Length: 401
Image 1: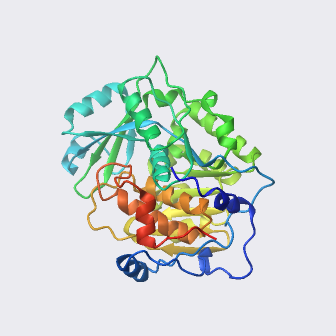
Image 2: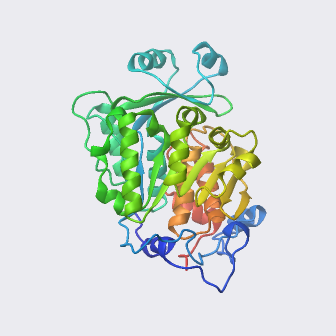
Image 3: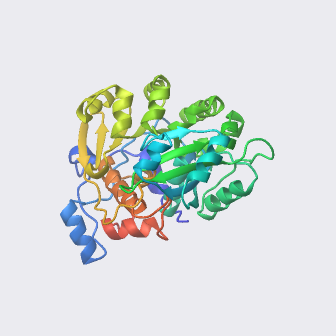
């Protein structure tokens, strides 16, 4: 773990923009880090990736705050993913909506698992993937999510703590088994998820460690939590702790079907608690009841400090209260599995914010981290260090000023 970003993180929430260098549109800062290789330099030049040291944090403080212990604390469903390849005919035969997430019970999970082809077990969960990505980037991170003290639960706990994540949640000793998500990856790399929530349904307000939330600069939650009443109460409590501590609250909408189930709750949360919103284009359209990215942009603008809308190969739209910009996707040589694309984009984006980068530059970092995870099976980084990858591709060979 690298713990050298505390000062930059505090600047994210507490210091004013330097008047020496005005920002370009969408907050992209002037200047450039020197690329560490000629290949990286060519990539930067071709894609317009000129990242600068931050002039001030984009987000301003709500009041006096102590130095945070964590850059980001995540709250989500602690799940072990079982991934297998499947064609569209299999999805149709099983009655599964391609590209969506369907909640299933334990009996259906056993039936579907038996019908699937050979699979691989990998620790997952949307917010957990983001937190693991942040850890690989060198961020100081914590995670709250419920497992049972069973075989899959021990796999999950081992994997997340081994990546350098502080994980204080006490496991269940009785009750539902650890959650699993049966993920079917189509030939076009689209993923269809079928999730048995199991122990996740037992996450409640009693599991929210107030000290962790108050000591995190940003609390990040996944929209899937709204599928469980107790977890919904836990998230609202965490949002209250975040606000009381003067910290920032980030929400990922998770899935368009999830948005459809909980639209009113998400809108209330957006208007009253959310500082940073992550959504893909389908989720943004579902939340805003619109049919185009431009209409969704207009509906979201000004409702939170930052909205990052991912658009697959078209990149990301960054929506700020006073401006909008589009950031290109990072080239992907071979698209294998899109399961963790949004999760790892959020990891890169939040890491950029924690280093004090402007939102447009945060999206550029997110594009690189998302490109890495879609190039292999599984929703966690396959490289030893995402920080090294980002530094090489974007030329970040220095500590932000």
